[in-house]
Length: 286
Image 1 (cartoon, rainbow, N blue to C red):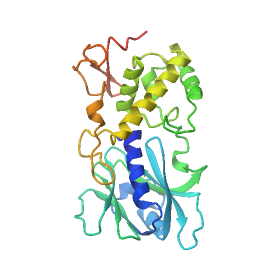
Image 2: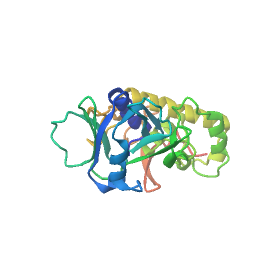
Image 3: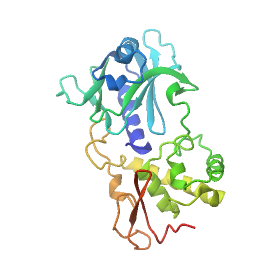
Image 4: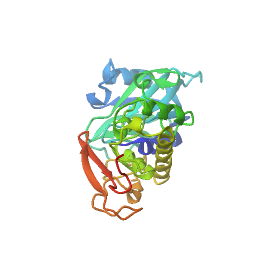
């Protein structure tokens, strides 16, 4: 699943191509793309046409388009189109005569003639049109801030983590504590901070927890600069290009490779129906 850096790359692309443009029409081609909409695809189609995109925002792994009334220019800060990429979702900028993808699930036509496609091979992603609460779509208002959010309070997040008697990696994956972190970047930030993924959070000092959050910010900033992490053709930016951070990974998917710090071989252990990758020497459980 795309994590924070990958979603931010897509958000920036949509900001460049969509903000300031009016949506001429919308078409939802697959019911799963609007499965969380009470009125399904027809509700999105009927209510989004004629609106102008005023901003592209993100929190964690979710992004959304803020919409305004195009004819009057009246701000509609209470309405947004939420986009969740799921496992394989792509938001692609296309010309009208582009060959149709067999996995095209929804699209909008813009006033400059461009089309924005939602391509989703596995159909776990979706669109949702609805109210914004304090600038965030109501559907994801429970999602916490992320480590790249300027308003993120690392001290408060560290206190929240320390109050819980659970494995630190499990907590990093909890989107209601800190958002945007998935398996890839959890492994990477834990490696950088030299913390074992199964270390109990309440046994880590507040200073160490803040160091861990800062490591997450550092790792994700570097990933963002390289366009995110692509392991296959399913994650691309709005122009269809892959990211290259996979070439810089230190822990995730590095099983059997020497640790970049000490040379000990990286190991993989099963965790929460997925894998944890870490250095048994640098990241000792205490």
